[in-house]
Image (cartoon, helix red, strand yellow):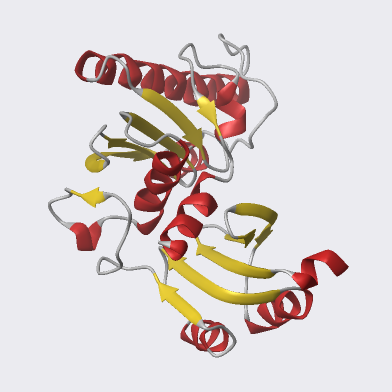
Length: 246
């Protein structure tokens, strides 16, 4: 902790649909990553007591906490709130940049930072499951949005009369022998087929494409996919830090 206090750090705040992810970077090196159900001025103040932050970036896909932003902005030399007008190190070809999720763009920047000048497919499995493509010209091309793991399980329960709400399990059988296992098997194996199928299709367009997997539920699918992938849970934080330094 004493060594951390000697360094000037970057504070990365990502307000997602279900949680807030925090990254502490020493230039390009991730020092600490944290996850909160809520991240308010109290939690931010505790981090400022631990680290000396000079720069900070906030990205949000939900309602912006103006009080938190003002608190952080008043404590750093450089503050960025990520929106469609923020300069990023890749070209954005999306037809409606204002509607592009900040998290989708940031994970692509992160993948591009780790593997520049390459065709990339970034699959982010969180509340939603997104597929996004960056080409070898370092241009964000676009992508797809699908349902995430929890959302699929909740939808089956919500839109039916008798199907139960199933919690995430350690394993998904190929053939469920009871209703809970059948639901979980159908959802997980359906997602695996969807991911592998999309990878096969995109490889017909970009034969040499590299695939990155990230997001809260990515660990569950990493070992189940047939395709060769780069799994990185911190891709979003890396991307936001890259945008901040840029």
